[in-house]
Length: 361
Image (cartoon, rainbow, N blue to C red; front, top):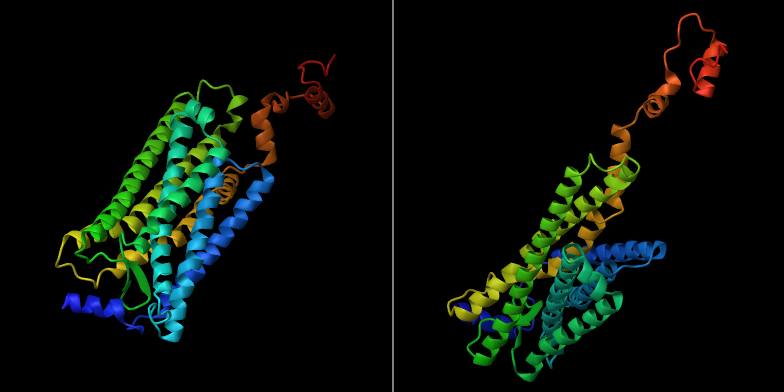
């Protein structure tokens, strides 16, 4: 029964169900989020020179935007024309494009996220090595290599190593996980293993970054009393940056695992188990498609300057005091109690000179 359903979905020429509402919402949210994120990144770049981390963030957002435009319009077109991806092209070009895009952008997105995690790990955990080895040029070269390697691997199904097939309801094309051919199984295992390794190393790098940031916070807190007051004026800002890194990395890691790990499990399970059912295959694909939508909104909401502005406004409201109390706390000698019998003029001279007793001399 499951095999017959699989064969029907692989060859059908019309859409067998579903609704374009979900795809339209995901497409709109993805385009809006990525465009807003690119605008914010460009504004920051004009204010100060871009760092390596900002270069990687820009590359990730651009990749997510490119992936959204490569996949979602095809699905919407299939729904509008009531034709499956195979029905829109007799030579399977549309299906091949869709399968290549899904495989390519899933690998590239996770690879860039892994490189970002490694960059943060070196920057915070190994600053000397980071300053010596890492640069924006290194980032550009690494991104180009990521694109090249992922494109070569994702293109091997066109050469017979791996296979792209159409999935229900006829609006998806992805690698064939229900296969008996050995070469296709090997391709699936390599693909799933690459995703799994990137997930594991990203989680480990982010956990190490969180650990080092926690150590830095404890050291700052322990030495807070010994730091001179003049030098301690910038301390709240640095602690706020540490908190921003902790929250951003934590949310990125959770979204990363939730969106990618189900696909890895599905590919392993379907490749190794003969009795796997196809009705749950669409859920991991939807989660992978949601990852490029979540990424830009995470950066927009959790990256500076928005959290910093909110934090500053909250601090100003909670720490607001009358002007006289602030001046009194800064220079209490200027507001000493006036002795009985002194005139107002004498107290004024006393405040002006700051030297007690000069008013009567």
